Image 1 (cartoon, helix red, strand yellow):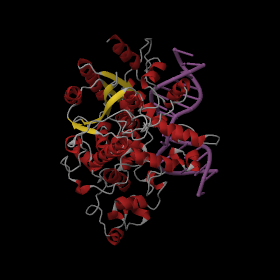
Image 2: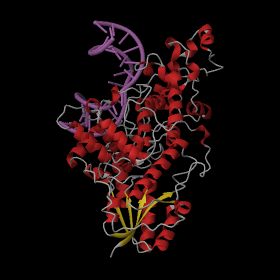
Image 3: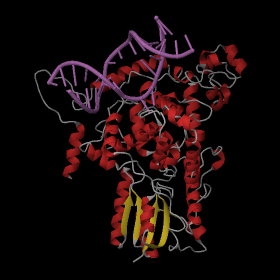
Image 4: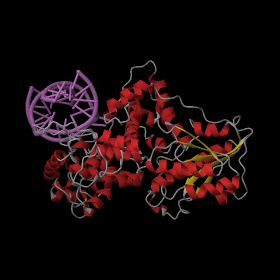
Length: 519
DNA sequence: AAGCTAGTTGCTTTA
DNA sequence: CTAAAGCAACTAGCT
């Protein structure tokens, strides 16, 4: 019996390396490729750039499906409301989707699977968003997520290289399959424009990174041709403040699944073949493994996007400071390097990883002493590559809450950028009001004599803000506050020597592992 | 069990 | 100019 299938696109907005889609095609007479605009995921919290990227990716997907005599069906609403109607209307017998490890997705998919069963619909899902089966990695580490990168690497070495990607479906694969489309398809199931979604597009800048599988593969090809660059790639050696990106900017494509991480991995392996090349953690393979590291942590650690209830996260008495937070978010901290990065984020939806370090450290343990969860929300809204696991993991890393503990290493908002951009060209690009400042003062315009400020046509305190905090003073205080927070960590988190009393305290991870096993 | 080593990417001063 | 040392000292993971 040939199936009537829905393939549910969520992430994984691609045809290549899409095993769940291929599973749908195997024994299929009718195929309905579906994307649901779930208000829980796609709402006003999602920034314009991100919306534009998604719409581009959906358009590209629809375009590719058309070449296979199919179409994309875009629906709006909660998946648990949408699916029962579709199951009945289309007489669906099979639902396929790509496995997604986010907590919301796991609950959503469980609900939808139950509904499918109630409607007599079979469900098939496949793992293709990550290099490895994340649950398998955790299993391999005795049920605990590795807390260090090297530990994760050991696990991946045990499991061998990631699976090879599978090719996209061909016209031949689709020859006996129909996608029933009415003339009203565009009206009923079309891809909305930003205007239709009620968004004001006036503030949108140039589309530097258009969404979609075609653009993803084009960019991949482009970078993979640079064999010398790929083989010598070392992330810490790339510049956070170059005028054009010093890295691939493939991250948004991997986030939305326009590019398969495994395809990326194996293309790199081809380039490396027979040549001397850099290695993890700094190589491009290493970057994909960092993604895997944070995915594993996000699956294995409860409340991963929060401080409270997160057993491996240092509990810190962050301040509530709406004024400071707004200044950071709106690029008016008075530190040009910080403000330039936040401007790039707002305008382009992307900035270099090390630039993220600088602003994340500044918001949290370095200067403003505001919770990393606040920064997480801003990045989630504005980053094209905003990824639940990576965002939460990196914010914990940078705030020295989890994974990274050398809190006394504080990024200087003045010195850090100078290493790779002495003249401050990056600052001048994103903060044009500082364009005429001499290099000597570009990172610290408040130090410029009045005459220099006047000559530059920019008075600090009037045309550009004064620094909201004095870094030299505040960062030292904050190191002491971090030290105090670490001293308060529970015995399981940091073994405290108690005189006379010998007690073996189970690690926090063991504790919550037992709890979850009992359930 | 106490101690050791290593850890993607700090800053500043010195050689 | 670059490279190393000093700064003060964290945890995870291992032995």
